[in-house]
Amino acid sequence: MPDVQVLANDFINKLRKRKIEGSQATSRQTAELLRSVISQTRVPYTNQAGALIDAVRAVGEQLIAANPVELAVGNIVRRVLHIIREENLSLATAAIAGLGLSSVSDDEDDAERDNHPVLSAAVVAAAARSTLRPPSLQTLLEDVPDSGAVPHTSSSGGDSEGKSKSADKSSRSRKLKHDVIEALNELIQDITTCHELIAEQAVEHIHQNEVILTLGSSRTVLEFLCAAKEKKRSFRVFVAEGAPRYQGHLLAKDLVTRGLQTTLITDSAVFAMISRVNMVIVGAHAVMANGGVIAPVGLNMVALAAQRHAVPFVVLAGSHKLCPLYPHNPEVLLNELRSPSELLDFGEFSDCMDFGTGTASPLLHVVNPTFDYVPPKLVSLFITDTGGHNPSYVYRLIADYYSADDLVVQRRPPTAS
Image: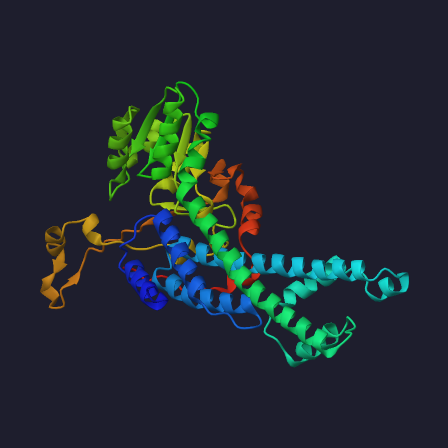
């Protein structure tokens, strides 16, 4: 089996060089790498969950730092940390509940039942939380009375019970890793099939003879529109080309190939055409905790035009794009500057240099941002693989996928590339 650090370094280099395109591919590869990390991590006798969390956090910080604007990486790292905590809590709760049940069944006398009451939910939760902390001298001393709570008839019986407990702890350690890996396999499967789950809802939102507007290219949008076409919906699609990369050209070709009536327009024509549109359907780079959207550049203009003409603005996003962070300063923290060559040929750019001063400093500066920020007030509906949700409900979805303790995985501000 390849060394984890070698795999991590290879993935980090791809992230730094922007060789991985798309949040889905990035999310899937991040989850697969972290699955390998967990599989090869040797857990100690105690605090197995803590060891797994430390291993995932160490690799996760490197991945996030490699490409901070690829928010899907941080999302998956935090999702994996949440999975470890949840699986460990489940095992600890089951073990403590089993201990409480055994104490009741073994002691038939009422007096002895009073000495061994069934543990309350608060005690179970406290004990489960304590398993996430490193063992201290106090906890080790507190474990001594617990091991002797049940009377022993002989020393050999005590030895056998000690061996049994040791085997139980070892079994629980193996089960924790097994359960976490199984949960990660389900996460990877969810990431892989998110397009299909979102597309299944298309027939509920796209109706006969409607006009749909989108911008740029998104596989999720493509599958969503084609799914409605397969359900015998007849509609037309306006595709804004998405300058300067012109990804809309690719989407328009794919839609025509799949038999959809498509009209390609320039980005500047969006406001002129929006009055003919029944709905705007777009993809997203990330969905922030406040319901705002980090999307391809140009979509904020489309959202403003849709709001002006009261056209629903619908965002398609898999659950792996739900980010627990807030966009305090999206212009600085959540954007990336692409090469000026996408806007201006280098030969033309050299003509704009001032060689008379001797410093050859440019008189023309080219700024080519990658992303826009669409505030939640401009979004009508989110459609995820779990269904349709209002922007005000995004925080509740995020609470199901992340733990508050895992938000400390810091994200460094990106630099222009």
